[in-house]
Image 1: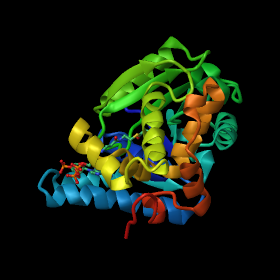
Image 2: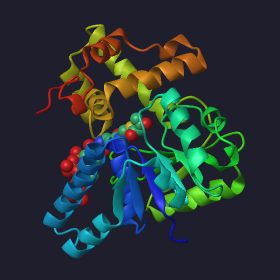
Image 3: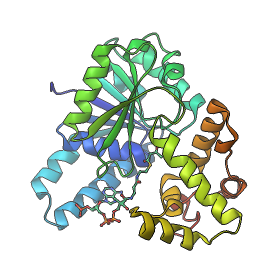
Length: 283
Ligand code: CAA
């Protein structure tokens, strides 16, 4: 595939992982966030992750240096003027995403594809704030991005076939397996995963089992690599709550009602691994 220049908007957990796999696949990447400290830390964390692979003998030091060189950082969204493909990975809130897409549309060349890594928001609604809805698409990576093979690809109502094919080819070039799903709340991944996590939280809330017991049941009984409560911590409890609310509001059924315990944890600021405390405590 032609060497695209890529911008990743948002240097959080997902944005960093996406920049990592893009650079690893040979693409020049600009990593953008609002503050220099955030993008610099983001690049450092990618470097640390690659460093671990070097220590394990899975990556040559020279290769690691070349991968890192492909990643530049910026706090200026105008740098999108030089890129062919944008992958947005800002906070999972539709209002913030719409603001970002509105700005990107104003600044990016007309041919630039604007993809969103949203895990639950409507692609059609995000695309509608731009003057190029045919160039807007969902490209949903899984966490941790360097490890997980899936990328859900979601067309908005107006997404063109050409943009769909280019996005699919990019996912393949990143050594991922693209799977097409339709533009409904939570798509397929979170329509299935989040109610399971929410139910695990209800199981603790209703006193059926402790958090450790719930996680053990799912790990040892269903062969899940980590229990649903640890996974929720790992995703971020604020993100889990937002996705449950999107499912509840979008699909209407009471079966998607977020557990009050999840709401309480988010109110307390116990958001999981990223804040040092969620269902579990982290250093
Ligand atoms: N970044 C990069 N690589 C990572 C990593 C990270 N954050 N975490 C682990 N790895 C790598 C390790 O370096 C190791 O690589 P090598 O095999 O090359 O040595 C490999 O993954 C295995 O790691 P570990 O041995 O340390 O640990 P593990 O076997 O327990 O695996 C895990 C860790 C891959 C995270 C595994 O626990 C797992 O698959 N968990 C479930 C993840 C999951 O369900 N993700 C989906 C979340 S939902 C989502 O993302 C969508 C959404 O919209 C909310």
